[in-house]
Structure formats: C-alpha cells, structure tokens
Image (cartoon, rainbow, N blue to C red; front, side, top):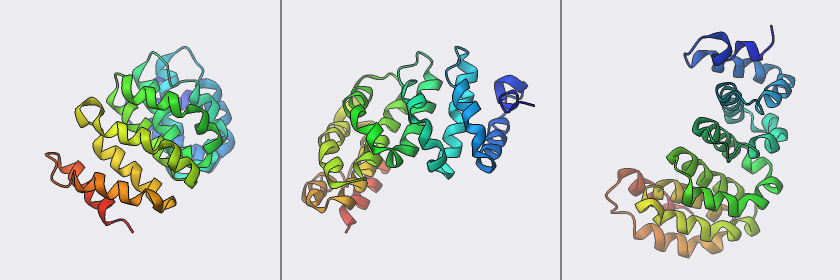
Length: 207
C-alpha cells in the first residue's frame, strides 16, 4: 500500500493517529518523504494538509531529513487553504536552522506574513522561523532583529511571547544584542499575559 493511502484524508480515519503513524514510518524510512513531498503539490487541500502535517511531525524529531524538501514547503506559504499554510509554516520553522540559505531570501516575505496573514498560527510560526534563522549566525541575527522587534507590537501584542522566545535564539548567537533585549524584556516582565511575562523573564535572565 502506498504511504499516501495511509494518510488521514485518504484512509477515512479522521483521528490524529493516522498521520502520526505515517510520520513514524517516514522517520524509520526517510526515503518515503519523496512521495509525501510530491503529494504536497496536490490540488486536494486535505491531502496537501496531511502531507504537510506529516512533514511537520517528522521535522520536529529529525529536521535534517525534511530540510531537503524546503522548497516544496515554501511554495505553500501563500496557499489559500489555512491549514496548508500553517502546517507548511510550522514545518519551515522546524527546519529553518538547517536551511538558512533558503530562509534568507524569505525574510521580507515572512515579515509580511506576520503583519498580514489572517491565521494566528501562520503568524506565530513565521516569527519562530525568523528566530531559528536568526540563531544560525550573528549576521542573520542582526538582519532579523528589527523584524522581531516589530512583531512584538503587531496585532495588539498578540505575538509578543513568540517574538521574545525567538529573540533568545538571536541573543545566544550575537551577545551584542543583549542590551537591547534586556531593555525590551524589562518593559514586559509585568505584562498582562502570563506567557509574555514568562518569555520576558527568560530573556532577561539569558547569559
């Protein structure tokens, strides 16, 4: 049986277990990812969404095996189906540190996603993708610092905790950003949202 036939939308099993099982097969036999990647381009949104979800699950465990398929994921970032977009962006965030050369040309596009995409999940993972990319080198960190600063206040601060979390990656690779990071964190340690307070305190304590 084709690995595609085992996906949730194809097997009729609507539980999360189906795609998790497929991801388990992929982790044991990474060559199966080629078939998953090919089906990602399907006009069937449910199938494409399943494939992106499998890649996301696999990437969370073994980003290196999914990284070669970055281009296929990037092609889905503007998909009209919300689930396809968010799974593609989530997966891209998981592999961003593996493919900085793929993320570098996307910085402006990811910034636009954070500002304009209707999906909270897409925006969250676009921020985390910038953080993962920014953590790959001091040059990358400096490049996306202003993007993350802006993400702190967009959407009435809804994504502040994610932006602060991403900033930790940048400070770790470029300590020259620490003074600005601590100033930002100090201003948010008493934020009304617990998640923001927690992320701010972690950034403030970062060595």
